[in-house]
Amino acid sequence: MKASNSARGLDLDSPGLFCESYVTKSELARILNVARSTLVSWDSIALYRIDSYRQAYPVKADGSTDRSCPLSPYQSWCLSRIGRVMQNLKSAERVKNYIRKYPEDFSPAKFTSQFNQVTRGNAA
Image 1: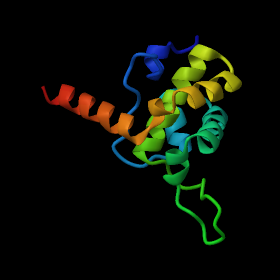
Image 2: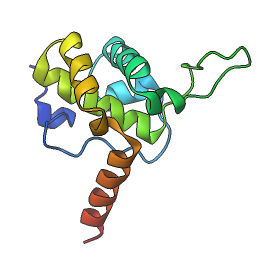
Image 3: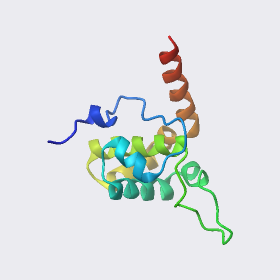
């Protein structure tokens, strides 16, 4: 039996996943109940289409991106949003087009805004 979108935290209208600390791709895949390979493909989509996502990775001495390090809370949130969009659009190409059309949906400002909404809601 397949987990529902709600169980995965991938509902389109949910604020996304907020991790309190850095997590590995394997840990995030477990949290989202998807295969690690699926998460890695979402990471590739984000890396080449969302500048702030790519910039959140450290840079190696040779100038390349160090993709083996744990994901920041912002990056985890981005990947959960990409997963949500993928669940609804069913195609990597459509997801790429969605990101191109709505880059603000994956911005650090949107992350901060939604994080503040969630934390205010939990404090009430």
